[in-house]
Length: 245
Image (spheres, rainbow, N blue to C red):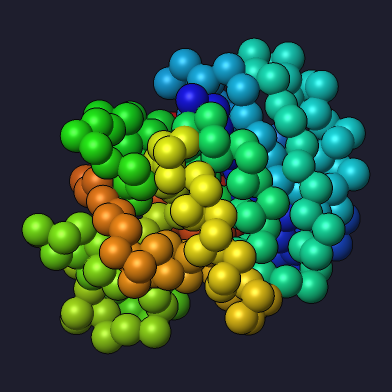
């Protein structure tokens, strides 16, 4: 199993930080970045290899690659997204389709979360599960969250931001365990999605899979502190949380 990080995004709402850096390299605890936290989590659960999908300001990640490898004891492979500033992240994840064949824990490059999330996903592994989403079933939901509906017998049935929060089981936090045997089907679903609309999120690829009859499972993460960093208010929350890990 390897780690995979989506770190190609521009994060325009985090300017001026992202004038020169991708969102994943915005500092959240001193010099510690969002990417640092994710790599630290991966190292703690015993992963030794991580793919990082880069695009916007990718040179900043290339410049830090060797130092990050030494700091976390990881072998990093950078995967270029050639359309990072034009298309949304369904295409970005598709760029990592070969990495997924190795079994991956996927983490969004803007999610500040504790290692307990990865441990929860690993504990949920097995019993034929191919894709497992980390799900927050505690947080109060609003319009911006990536909401998920779960059927106890069928697994995930719906994932979208465009849903009445009252209908949702919880929020997908941007971390997924994907078994290698799901790689080809996921890649095909992602391709279908971004070819129809290049601005689609990769979560629409998950929905496409479910619409095709593919089962996606979830793992509730419990009452843990995490945040998806989209803007300066989120960044302030991330800095409050990150120093507690």
